[in-house]
Image (cartoon, rainbow, N blue to C red):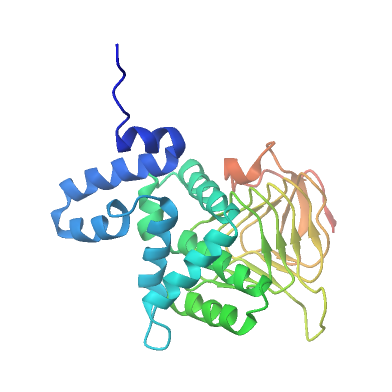
Length: 278
């Protein structure tokens, strides 16, 4: 008995389940909301790969009279071609938003509409340019991302995969900052320096950390793996692993409360177990 050839949808499902799911979701949206059907088709359904859809979408957002959408797309396609692992990071970031944000019901929602996700992907392209010595062009995209999305990530910073930037507004990440994998941060987070010093001067956020809304982490200090920083806190000293810190200046107020704070997104701080300044 001859087996029929797999359909395009079946090929997507086997090779790229995130993209396959996104296409199905986009098709449902286009049927349910005719007013934005052409946008959904142009941005998602007209493309064979997630990478192609992403470069098109970002180019439409970031292109302007100085550097047009076509040039933006060509540059971003070159980045993805030269460094395919960027595509893996895109999928990990999409999955992080889908799994951690209770307001999200589909993969296609953050892809189409969430500026935190889109700003992070544009940073990844700018970081590629920076690594190739094209620093001026990288800074152009940093500026455009800040203008369009309200997120300012220096292209020299090192940001891992599986990152969720919830809401995105007013997130600032400095030049020598490091953000490891599986980190979640809310709006208003700053990973900044403390003055005019040069060199390695920005925070190192280790794996699995959750940074609450408005948290400020300043200086070349480390926030240990799987820790939590409470909303509105100002962190000026190193944070141990698996702890919760809160306040101005931040103090250790207890353990992290769970094994994966960035995934749990629990921002309730229990009664203090400790009362000493870090």
